[in-house]
Image (cartoon, rainbow, N blue to C red):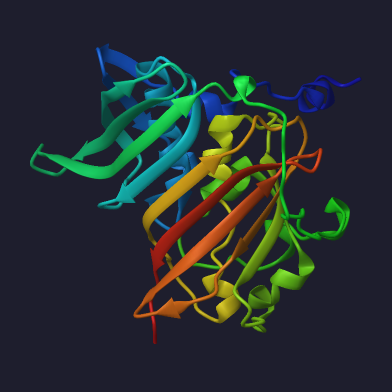
Length: 286
């Protein structure tokens, strides 16, 4: 087998992938971490909010006595840019089954002053210690087989500017939710897709924080264009995902006053609901 083909066949693993390297932090002091935010996770000219959430999620996993995020709530204060940043964490409470902490990410302005970009409050635990009892009316989204869905290469770029994040994802959109790419948005405010990392790394709880904010905005299917910045995002991680691609379904029911909500569900390869989220986002009208 040619060397290039052999290298392409090697799948990245959890802990040794581009996502892991780009979310890795250096501990400067207890609760204080340095990182260089990668330009590889940008959309338009800003760093993706899910990637940022994973960065802070990794810092809290190190700072808290529990490793798995259960619930993470983030407020996005100012737009983050690729480059140096510092994350500061505080342990709010360390319990037997749940620990709670807060974290903030800061960057520097052109005068060297710290600017807070995002603030997070989160509770962590041990997903492997949860009981197996599941009682739910939720059902996996009906998405065509992966080969029948569309990737970024199948249509025009949805927005002006960088879309570097698309090269890091395996994202295949449900054909019924890509009318916006053809100039024929459905008006339904729905987006569904198969999701994974482009290097083949399997999902874990940390990558679920990325998955809930990695699809094109539902605003596109409502008929709007341009950047849809996140104001607040809350993620609930329900169980450790099985290996294989994820299915992500996002819906918006109400756009009012220049803001909309996005409710997301993430399902793993064995039909388990592994994460849920809700975010409030701003939209550009007119």
